[in-house]
Length: 48
Figure 1 (cartoon, rainbow, N blue to C red):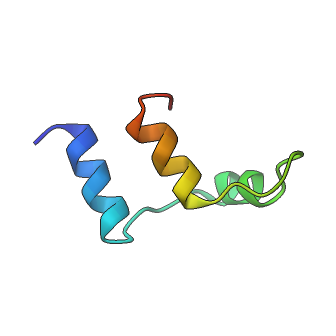
Figure 2: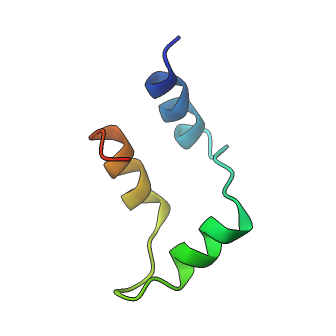
């Protein structure tokens, strides 16, 4: 199984883990909070 498919499955099963730093950055982004859906969309488009 390739990494893209495995990561999609992790998002689907709500099994994505973030570092403390990443969570802080997501919650305190200058232009507004970043939510998991946005992270998934960027990942699925190959932009991460």
